[in-house]
Length: 264
Image (cartoon, rainbow, N blue to C red; front, top):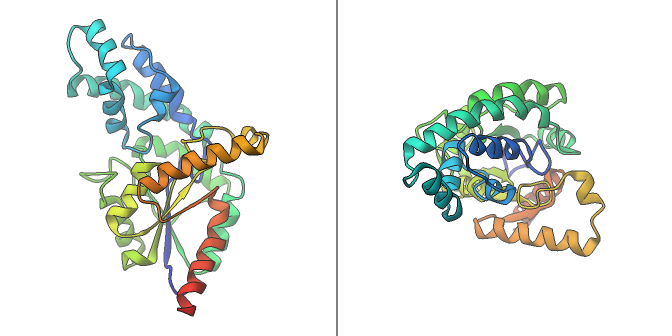
């Protein structure tokens, strides 16, 4: 392959945890510790952001902020975000590894990409402490990317480009146009766009659809197509160059793009 040198993958909803379920209960329980009820939809809305930013987005959303004001007597502050975040992280650490099952076919797709000559990088909205339990579970299933950049590794995380710049250094790959960023969330796609990389969204396995592989498989085709289209619109709106169903579709897409470049 001549056009592409590396693929950089997100984790939950992209390579592992089909439907991105691990953080959901942790967010609900963490907010409940402060007397605040949040829905799964509210927990999913900021997905892909670094987790402190995610808590901030949830806490300052109008319905939740009104609850906080009523319960605590003042509008939520950054100190309140710190407090909720401090409770949330251990909860997510406790469950993330349980959900670290590879998306069906993801391991084979990565093997195919490596055989095509690509290096494999990774970034995540998870903290390093959360990923500590995830890495060995993924490795036991055969997935061990060449690097990992976590949300708290750098002074600024998604949607900025620093995580992708760190991948370029770690993997010794450039220019940005030779790197593919693959993600299921708007902030993760924006991370790739900000760095000047080709961006590929994954629709069906991601947070926007929010179903298990088994649940997706039994959906009526019309409903599956509607959910796929809604997720794709979100990803395209975030700047995705292409959208695929899951990472299993990536090798064929990259071969097609490489052939088109060679023929041009």
